[in-house]
Length: 135
Image 1 (cartoon, one colour):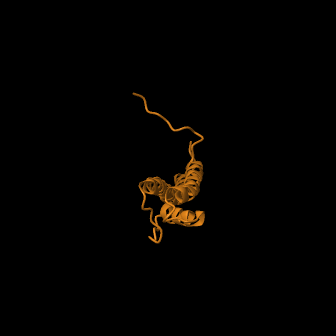
Image 2 (cartoon, one colour):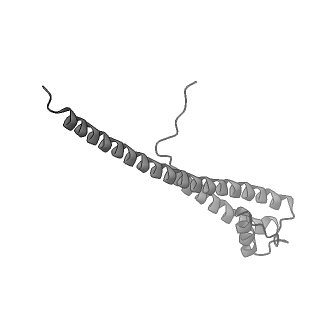
């Protein structure tokens, strides 16, 4: 079985934007939906949205908690979405650090190669001077 390649147009930034948009949509929908499925614990859409923000960011103050089965199902979707979003954010930040380190190391290697090439040129000139004219 051959190796599958990711599409060339799939970048970390694009994936982050897509996952961020999905997370935002799920959070808004869940915050609004929570008002319908758990009216006792979420009497307003604002309280549902506040709960969704707390949940998706994994802060979870606990001041709003769904008590119905439907509410807990919605909460499960928001929790999984939040974990995925935070994983992508963490991976993106890590990738930035790794790329920055790689660039710095590459520049150092280039400077080192330039230095070596310059020193070799100096040695060749000195050897030519010491050996005198060639026949």
